Amino acid sequence: MNAAATRPGARRQSWRTRVRKNYQRYSLVYWLCLPILAYYIIFHYLPMFGICIAFQDYRPAKGVFGSKWVGLKHFLSFFTSDYCWRLIRNTLLINCYNLIFGFPAPIILALLINEVKCAPFKKTVQTISYMPHFVSMVVICGLLVDFCASTGILTTITTFFGFERTNLLNSPKLFRTIYVASDIWQQIGWGSIIYLATLSTTDPNLYEAAVIDGAGRFQQVIHVTLPTLVPLIILQLIMRMGQMMSVGYEKIILLYNGLTYETGDVISSYVYRRGLQSGDFSFGTAVSLFNSFCNIILLVAANTLSRKLTNESMW
Amino acid sequence: MVERKTPASRAFDVCNYIFLVFLSFICLYPMWHVLVGSFSDPVQLTKHYGPLIRPLGFSLEGYKVVLHNPNVAIGYGNTLFYVIVGTLSRMFATLIGAYVLSRKGFMFRKVMTFIMVFTMYFGGGMIPTFIVVKAVGLYDSRGAIIIPTLIATWNMIIMKTALQNVPDSLEESARLDGANDLVVLFRIILPVTKATVAVICLYYAVAEWNSWFNAMIYLRDNSKKPLQIFLREILLQNSQNSGNQTVQADADVSAIFLEELIKYCTIIVATVPILCVYPFVQKYFVTGVMMGSIKE
Image (cartoon, rainbow over the protein chains, first blue to last red):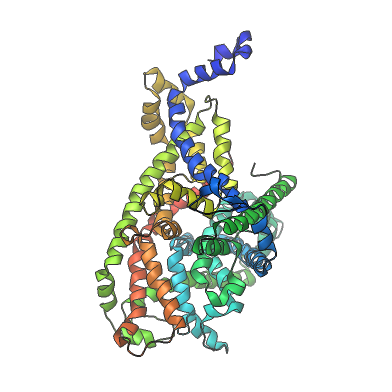
């Protein structure tokens, strides 16, 4: 094949001939490619095509081709509804809290674990802190509902601080706090892995040099440890920025109820409730398309920013 | 490292250790609370509002009820089926996809890579996917849990990177011995990359064990539902009902006392397998996280 490619006439070979030659050499790959391609077309590209129902009054009985086209009707009715602002606000606020409190938490944990010199202790703390990551979302939310119930242990703890004994999860004021705090609890250990791994590659000579220069523990952290993490932190931060408009629906759906829609309902959970639960397929798809559109813009912006600042990008 | 320990440095160490022990305690306590609670006496447990250090009294009543609940047994069986069949078929498909993408001479490699990677950034969303799954006849079938999520593109990219790192010379020498593509894939390449295969299998298995959303929207028939769906009914849906309504006067009093205990026992029954396994496999997950972070 290499010989064929270097022959002067090779470039003039038609596309068809090249495919045929390539097929002769890689026939198995071609055949293996087909089922994979079929999977992607059916379960990823057909749904993308299905987004067109956002511009229709989709009726399952009539199908995508028989339903009436209505243009931007669903988008307009979403943007003019009271829900629109509430959903965008809740989605952004949950992400903001997550960014402010949830993002630094694993970094701080990694720095603290890195200061531990006793290896078995280090290992034990790490293994224990990974545990919540492996517990299923249903169980996590079951625990939260139980602990936040009016007889639950978290409620009991809050009564020590002078709060009334009520079901915490029925309080709109507390929903986002509980959501973000439990997220941190679940992900802090797991999130620290990537930072700890980067720290383990730090050159020990740097610390020795710092000690010779008279740097104390705290100064070593500030001047040696933290700078090794900075590129990673910037990259992770930018990737977070690209997800500011998306909140996973699973935990929201499990935790919220009619009393907490005001602060807990986010775009994705609303799509589920209106689209799948109430069967309003077209409207739900329109809201979801609006959300994807925002996500793509944020992602492209974040990626461009990343390329400018760190020379690293996702594509 | 020779280091002079100043008092401040010592004080920091002490605080650091205390903090990390406290954090570990917070991570462990909820499961401990549930474990201890599950062996407690139902009446004492319901009346107890604070933390639990050890069982309040002792009873196995909750476990009796849970293990006699047919749904728990059905759910367990189904979850095992989805985890085993799902992981094997997903791994197989992922491997095939990764193999296709890793063949450098394959003319459509770039196109295929684009087709697959594009789906990581943009998708049809929940509702169109639901319509497609319904249209291809998978609704309310076991296939609906496995087939629509057959390949996690991210895992496939990791697998592809591993396959690409297999030295060409290994493959070429096998070819000189007359091995065909399939033999090369399964006899030569796969054994070299088995660490990655193991990691991805674990990822798929744990994700399947914990997943519930697709089962909730695609399955109607109780006999096909996985454990997490029944868990949700026991843990979340009952409580939401009883939380909003006042307890009826004629309700069975002992059943009310059992409710909390049953919840705890169900959580233990459903979570213990994962909790027993994770300390031993977590190091593979850690390698997985690192593989994901390495750029090609």
